[in-house]
Image 1 (cartoon, rainbow, N blue to C red):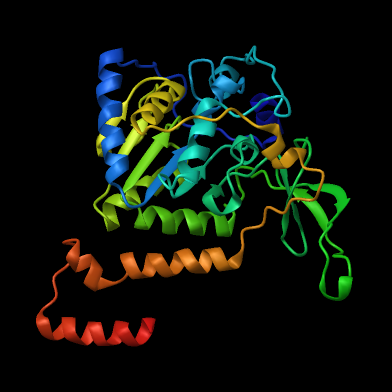
Image 2 (tube, rainbow, N blue to C red):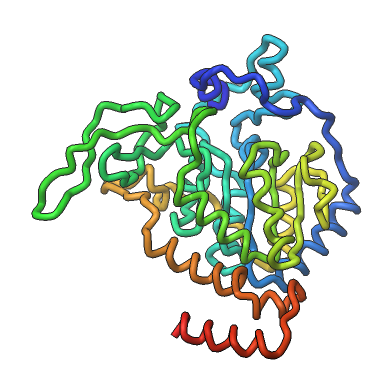
Length: 340
């Protein structure tokens, strides 16, 4: 569970603002705000969802900075009373709603700070998910860097060696000689390169960012939603029970439980939330499941990012810059040569 994960991390003093008072909107206010969110989502071209520990509390996994969060209680010399293990937790309504939104093309990408593996277990494909702080159900080879899904949650954190050999095959059928490590970041570790790169590109080309169950305090993940303002003039929607770091920059703030918001949102979009299905959970597969981000996926999204965010012609169209006719003609000629 969250506290056992926290116990495995190195000592770190600055864990952000803890135990802030929770705020609840009225039922009428929540309903009106979800109406607005549904309209924005239906009109959006590229929606990115940012998830934090708050989306997993209904699965029995404590958050970190809430009134009864792991780090809030830790500062008081206490431990959470909830004792559900990562292995026993199952995806929530929010996890399953996000899977459906991915499947129906309403959401293009999910960026998660969570290490509980519930997005993976819900069935979200790897190409739609950035796991910035790791995943208890994933291990990575120290040599070939390929990732594979585990049957059970790892008991170590901090990218430590797990002792088992890499199952990957090299050219000629030779086995990789690397050893597997957990992928859970400790405080001093750099974020996984491909996950962060894809998160950066997707938020850059997004026109709607939905933040669920996160106070957005940890950087750089907490600052990623702001990129939609820089490049697309997009909207930021925050659903959280506590104040967040970027409330002043949000276009809409919904203060209630994320499961309630997602249930109402799916009703507005006329979509059904399917129950968790163990048969599509990669941790229950009889065969080896790879979880490596393909280099081709990074290249594909990078190209879209360059075309949208680093193409001055398109930025001019969005009102971000102005070009005189001569410069515009020269730029059009150059871009035509670059992209054909």
